[in-house]
Image (tube, rainbow, N blue to C red; front, top):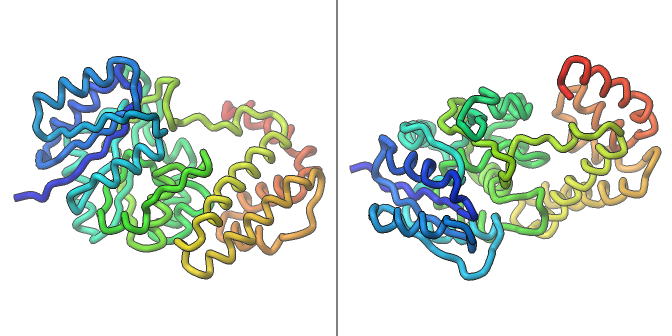
Length: 330
């Protein structure tokens, strides 16, 4: 008898695409599942749809929140409801290929991993392919190959997409509670980070999800920095993201190994200082180097100039932006 797997789905006003996603989960080749859904005070037809499905399939258990929790705390609620050794995360608006659970489970068992994550096919509202690979489009594939199963995988940026995750419940005691201080550290970011510190993470490059983009995604493919045509806009965003990340780390420092606790504090102070350095910064370069030293030379230098020498960036950025626009990458 195959072991039972809990599939966790957080819903909120998902009436338009919800049925298609639930059907794709219920019709998996791997049938021994429990679909646990938490609805976060939807005010459209979502709750009626969930009640309909709950009546016709005993594998579905739905919780209806009385107060809006938000995305992160809704997933925290679901993680606390996990009963079995293995669980998966699900969005409300995607479509899973029929063998997603079976293939991911085989990968988890074969690799003796604590967490498996994968790639996605990005599609539009009609499920037509926009990008064959989410990780290639978002330029995460190189980072994943380089850092998978190390604590760098999710330390500076999020390489683990939540809806691709299959993980073991035993790690949840370290993962919970989920921090909710920053919009830049969501549930999948934190899960991937903590498991990378404590256990074994493996990457499955196959794509078993049609990742639907429809304009109202909680998390999507939009690259905010690509909208900017001035380096100061990019720099402000980068600093705010890193401040949000490292403030979360410092607030939860007891959950990090000791060497990273010290780096978390230094990095937070470094990015906090950068907010007031508008043209040039001559301090904390060793901290920057410690954070970025394993990156490619180009990535290292781009970020170094943006963070520490923005006056040089103001000269180079317009030229770079024009070149990228000419080759249709902006």
